Length: 275
Ligand SMILES: [Zn+2]
Ligand SMILES: [Zn+2]
Image (cartoon, rainbow, N blue to C red; front, top):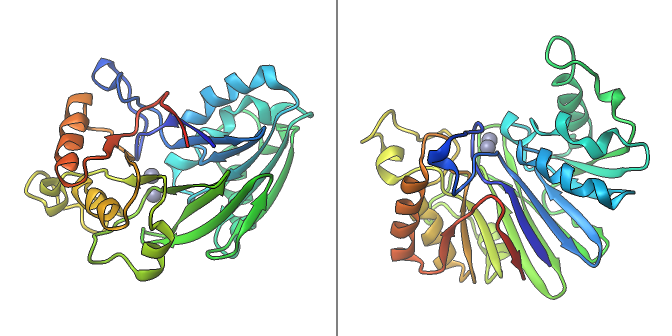
């Protein structure tokens, strides 16, 4: 299983030399195995992924959306492969009515006055479905378990198995080790790589620096590290970096996380791992 990080930033894209090492695009990951492709979230990182797929026509992928906050859908109108009639995408929206909600959100963000062309200008085959917590999705070599995460308006994490390896993508989740419920803890137990929300420092979260962030739906890098340690993850990628954090700040946060869980590292745009 190959995993590529195309967008690792949270909340809103960020650009400039101070974020160039970590990257400024919002959530988008690509997971590939035996020629089958998953795309996790459609943040602004999706645009560049789309450009790299163009030489590989006809293009097909299963797209799994964690939730529909804008930093997870904004890249979709700029996903060139979706404008090609030869492309085929299966798109999973989160929750029982995820199929309708996802279609509606993607259509609305392309309606006037937001965007020059409507969703119907995308000529690819778009097959919308719902990702229900606990309802396994099987596609190609992948066995995918959607799992509910605590976040305002809800969020879905995805546990992905293929080739005897296990990968978990849990962005946009406000968790502490103490609040980790047994079901989520069991699903994460011993994964080969864990991507986990680590947007804030404890000082930011508690309001010792700036406004308190409790209830904003994100975790600290320390809690991410504690959870990775408790669930015996093989690797932890700190994810959904705050748009206000420079490369130096993200790397300092990662050093603090490593004191708790030595296998922690910041997710970086352009990073590629083989599991
Ligand atoms: Zn987000
Ligand atoms: Zn969110």
